[in-house]
Length: 106
Image (tube, rainbow, N blue to C red):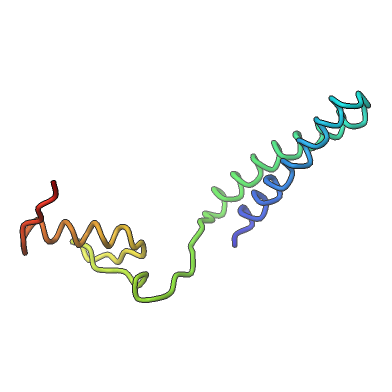
């Protein structure tokens, strides 16, 4: 898991806190709840910018560790390997339709 993903998870975890503080402010009218909601919203906004900057600056991408035969990949037309099972299905369909056998899809 990349640093940018960890910051994103923090931002997601701030959402329930923000909602609870807004609801308490609406119910009670205490300014402390309003202030905490504003602060949590601000922190989430800053985290959004920071995780985007880190992801672009350090070229961080999510690369899942995939295992099993279905995830091993297949050769595409240009020799690249695909690790996505859906891509493998489409490549198999295309190779059948374009040469080996006609694929009748109605």
